[in-house]
Amino acid sequence: MTPRPVIGISSYLTTAAWGRFDQRLAVMLPERYPALVRAGGGLAVLLPPDAPEHAPAAVARLDALVIAGGEDVDPALYGEQPHPSTEAVAPERDAWEAALLRAALAVRMPVLGICRGMQLLNVVRGGSLHQHLPDLVRHEGHAGGPNSYGRHAVRPVAGTMLSGLLPEPSVVVPTSHHQAVDRIGERLTVCALAEDGTVEAVEDSTGAGFVLGVQWHPEQGEDPRVMQALVGAAAATRAGRLVPVG
Image (cartoon, rainbow, N blue to C red; front, top):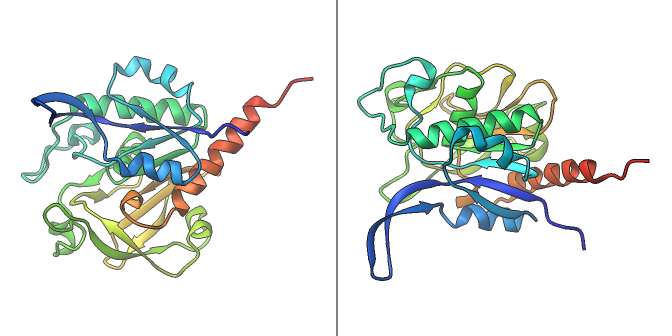
C-alpha cells in the first residue's frame, strides 16, 4: 500500500472550552481542513506555532504545506500602519507561518495558502495587502455573514496552472475576508479574479513547482480539486525523494 503524502497544516493558539475546562489556551484548526486533506488522499498533520528557527526541521518531515486562514497579517510585515479595521493579533503565528513558507519555498515543496495563507504568501514574496477591501470595492460581498461564509464567482485566468485545475469560465466559491492582495509579490502571478477585480488567487510565475494561494475557503465547499492537486504534487515530490539510487 502506497503511503499517503504527509500534508502539514498550520494551526493557531486561542482560548477554548472543553469538558470541565474553560478558557484554556488550545491549539485550534477547523476540522474541515484535515477533512479536505483526507478527501484529497493525504495524511494531515497540524503545525502549531513554534520558534521560527524550527521551521526547516518541520518542513523536512512533510510532503506539502498548507497555510490556513485566520486573523489579519500584521501590516508591519509589508511596511504599513494598521487600518482601523485591521485585527492583527497573532504575531507568533505570523512569524511561524512566514518561516514555514520560506522553508518550504526554499526546497520547492508544494504549497497551498488559503485566505490568510494566500495573503501571507504574497507578503513573504514582497507584496502588500489592501487592509479593508470594502473601502476599495464599496460592498461587503467578500465577507460573508455572522458565523457564516458568503459565496461569489471567481474567474480563473486563462493559461495559468489554476485554470488547468478549474477549467470553467467561472467557479462559485465560499468566501470570508475583508482584506485582499494589493501589490503582487515577486515570482507570483494572478491566476483568478472576482467580478469586482479583487485578486482571488496567485501562483508561482516561474514554473518552479506547485505554489498556489486562493483567497477563498475550499475546505468550506464541496469542490476538492485544489486540494487533490496539492496532494498529487506532494505524492510526486515524495516519490522523487524515495527513488532508489544506483
